[in-house]
Amino acid sequence: MKTVHKTAAPPVAGKTFTLFGTADSTKGYYRAVSDLADACLLLQPDIDTLIAEIRRLGKRQRLARKLSAPGATSLHRSLVQNARIYLEPYTAAVKEHLRELSLLKRLDGVLSFTEEQYHLAMLEIELMNQEYSARFRNARRKLAFLPHCLRDLEADCQAAPCDIDYTCRRCSDRCNVNAVSTLLRQHNIEPYIWMQANLKALFRKLKDAEGGLGVMGIACVPELVRGMRMCVKLGIPVVGIPLNANRCARWMGEFYPTSVEMEEVLPHVKGAV
Image (tube, one colour):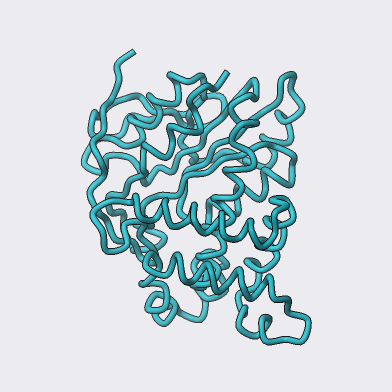
């Protein structure tokens, strides 16, 4: 099998977030979100309880009002404050994006993610990865779903549908979908480009198979956290790696090249059975 080698991704800026911040690499982001998770686990050592509290907070767009209400807890305030301190450099464009949204688009729960929701989602993704990575690797069948915006936009994409969804045909050595798919196949993980599959119905059908099902997702932060929550609700171990920036037509009006950090994919696939 041919291995596609990818060098470190060049910095890209998204419509709302970039994991590069103002740096030349994403290392600062991944160090910050890991340190944030450690700090929050000191406040609430039970990781399942912590994830549940973050999820509850993250579903509220008007967090400022909630945190000033009589029922707000010191844990909730600390989570939001700490997340802002660690992750604000990576979400600098959110406020301007929200100011530009039309009234109709404000009803879209993904497009209208607030900066606080981004911070909490990033933290939740990190904690879910810590909680479920080992179980994902040990699942007998492992599926990965990649966004089509990762493809080489200058190539004539030859991806084709199969039994579950579209699969990469390796038509371009410059394609991030090709690079990630090749890596995943080497570790017994089935990669698909998510185009048309009804994921909830598919996961319900497969989750009780002998040996269990594990799922990996790659997507922009709002889409990724929602998909991971769905898997957890279905009892499926899930890991997720956020895109380095959100640059697809949904956000930008047309597609611009984006990337994912291959070094962050590796820890979740090494040692997979």
